[in-house]
Length: 357
Image 1 (cartoon, rainbow, N blue to C red):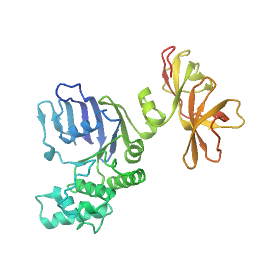
Image 2: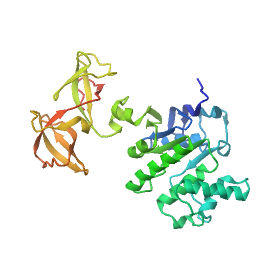
Image 3: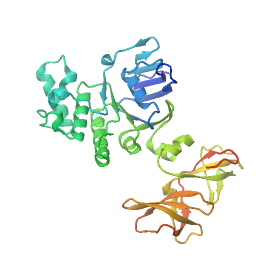
Image 4: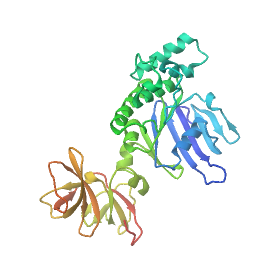
């Protein structure tokens, strides 16, 4: 069913290069007006190709794309990119080196009076935090400033959808995180509907309202960052999002799971039959340090993260876990420490008998 309050709807999108297996297949999503979505995945999963099909830069061979209810792509018809009113922010900024910043931002406003173009460009430069920078040229700007100019240029024509292809990948980590939060604030203030592509989970979670984890050309789970982390819909999503380790267990009566670390109660939605072998996901914050605990594990790796250490711990049976521990607990490699489980969200998946996690 097509609902008109969606800014973007994609249904069963398919694309392949000649003589090759499909890069995108069965790709489906919907973005509400003003929502920021993100396609998250590793290289080669099809996320950028899907974005290019939505922009009209690649011809989809199957499925349907709608912008505010209007069909812009289906088999046998496609609306040209320039007629879709879609803004695109590219990974390499794609600024014109021979134009100053003001004319770069005003470029998409051709056809309007020059005074109005320059006024609008100045408004957008102020919005992205670059007031008074219009006379500079791209080579005089830092990477973060170039990205702001690219964003201003994409927003200038008031697109009905903004697409961002790995927009912060050329920036260092601290600037990337800060700018992603700033860009989110700008888009939310403007009520702009946007779809971001990235391989960086921190960037995805900072920017987006809804994130789609992609695998083999389709979305494995389209959900909030919280649910992707705490309620992954598949073993693939559980492995891909965040950090963690799987241990073997067996389903017990009353939605419980028996493990070598004890019994965990309540696994809603797991649909496990008593006695069924399972793989149980343990996040680093599920495994807590406790000097008084009877269960011990050996510290095999440690990574200092300021307020915390991320410890890699080895159990008696050789299985390894991750644990976040306050950094005033500075344990040595090879030391055995007490641990206990404190799991708020039990996540488990059926496991074939005899399979190894």
